[in-house]
Length: 97
Image (spheres, rainbow, N blue to C red):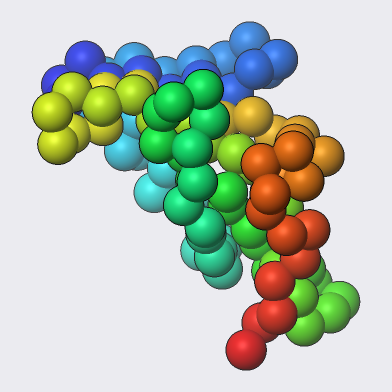
């Protein structure tokens, strides 16, 4: 969606427009990520995990709630609060293997 948005409350910075959102997401470096699909407030959501640098586990990074426009993502709100994961039944770590 051309007018997609990406926000990370409580951080004041947010992104608007497909180019800006994709640029931010792909410009975040080469993080090794894993994810688990879930839902939040009746919307699709993704629990994103990053590889912990000193162990063989992935740890919670953000819970990303998606707003859809048909099959396309029109909005992402990323909550960077790892404590939220247990409230959504998501594990607090994932094995690297």
